[in-house]
Amino acid sequence: MTAEELRAQVAAFLAGHDPASLSTLDFLQARFDAGLAWVHFPEGLGGQGAPRELQGEVEAAFAAAGAPDNNPRRILIGLGMAAPTILAFGTEEQKKRYLRPLWTGEEVWCQLFSEPGAGSDLAALGTRAVRDGDDWVVTGQKVWTSSAHLAQWAILVTRTDPDVPKHQGMTYFLCDMTAPGVEVRPLRQITGEAEFNEVFLTEVRIPDSQRIGAVGEGWKVAQTTLMNERVAIGGNAMPREGGMIGIVAKTWRDRPELRTPELRDRLVQHWVEAESLRLAGARLRQQLAVGAPGPEGSAMKVAFAELNQELSGLELELLGEEGLRYEDWTMRRPENVDFFGRDAGYRYLRAKGNSIEGGTSEVLRNIISERVLGLPSEPRVDKDVAWKDLPR
Picture 1 (spheres, one colour):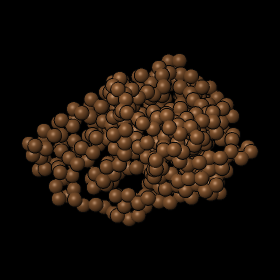
Picture 2 (cartoon, one colour):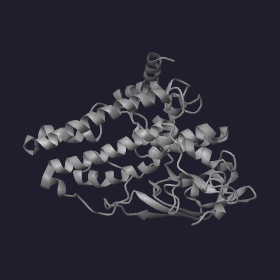
Picture 3 (tube, one colour):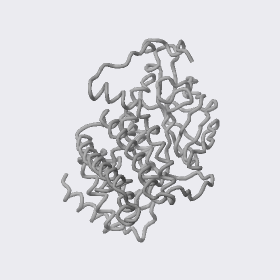
Picture 4 (tube, one colour):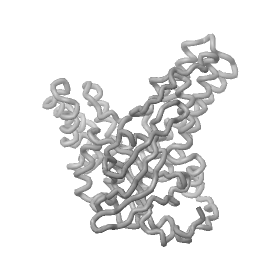
């Protein structure tokens, strides 16, 4: 499969599916069925087994034609985390049931991983799932759940065997967020909004048919989700001066009266860092074209978080008194994070979460040191202790 062949397929598809005469949903469903959703996915699942790097050619061709997209920022968790996990570990029935409405945006997904007592140490989680015939009964609490207030489905990791070490007794499920016993409560953030949530699970019944992977292998499945999550957050394709560096650079060019030599030095330094990160991201995506995400995505995510925080702080300093304003403290529950359509105050406050969400920078540095650099692991006295015997 070549780029020219894919562009020809897109042209033929558009000739038979006029975006102006079809609803967005009908158009997206037809695009999925034509294998032009994820071109690197298998045939019948939105793709045609083409090289991953050709996805950009398809997206560019549809964008040039003014075709609607699936609002990827709104369904990022589904696209970047649930879909690759279901593809890697799901049954054929699960793939056919979930991937199409996930990609079209008919069903929004969230991620039920972190808990009040298991954030940085995810394997310590305590949400229990107990087998009851063909169902599992799940009880526990999850936290920092983005988009839970919008989601129809969740990827969920639970504790199914407390008598074995923590990494061995976990099982992974797909959870219906509309099921009885699921309660979503907003968590108001420093921005004044509540894009995050707490989720309480009280005797929620999940059919065994919604289990992903084998019983007790939830940690293995979750690793696939986490590796893809870090790439989704830190490894997105960006043009030169894309993202926060473009916002700050534009302010610098448009407002010469704000400039100082010290701010110029910092801006140039961050510009170089942003360009290095962009090129590293391109290299990472080339590696993804020939394999699954690895621990290198953790380095991208750490670098993205730190640079975003530095740039949002630089923007406030550059704006001076203007940067102290904040547009609105109204409590809202937004559909996505909007760094580009909001003011500098929002960007500065929201960027503080970048080094926490998707794995804290501290945990990711451990991953980089051990799995990328090959340094000795930190001592772990609880590695071979049954979860039920761990101090809490």
